Image (cartoon, rainbow, N blue to C red; front, side, top):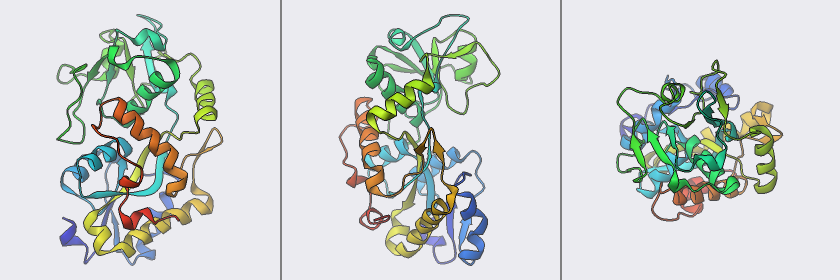
Length: 301
């Protein structure tokens, strides 16, 4: 697709955040209409077509999906800017009508996750393992969707839920012991309580200890776009930098959620790779530098 559209326009899949809003609003004027933003809601629907068939020139991308794509040598490359991050301690929940679980109690239990390779789930599992000593191999993971990479299969301790079911629905019915949910966590069910007793306090303590920013989404560009029009990739990246500099970045609990540049991202990306390897999301250790094309590695420096 990229070969046919580069001469006229740049097709971009990008969600709505403080850092992206000015770009989507002003791009038509600043680029003479060259940057065309696809209307995709939720933005997660862009990830599978991007990794499987290069559907866009530039796209937002979940970081686990990208790390897996790099492991399978997909022709897309990372840009050094985080669009979305959040502290994930609050995403691990149980149903208090059936049990009040704490992290170590999850061993031997069933935990529902939308997809085994979902980025929110990767972070939550990493928290359970690194901060609470949970043996992830002793959890029976119940999944509801395939991952974005067709080549990837979840490990043997993950099984598929019955067709048509949802994590929240099965948790509310007491059919699974716990669930990991981000935006899909029901807000109106007081029975659903966090497994971590003080998620906000523990998230702050964890950050002060490890300085890891739990990145959910970054940005990728097609290899064809990078190699044929690196100037346009840089123009897009510079627009993100300018947006943040204008005060459109996000701060959560005093932490910069939109780090830019490899130096600012390196430690958090190393942690992503560590978790992905431990959780059998990839089968070899990647270096942070491997995540970037020569022409995107230099951005932000």
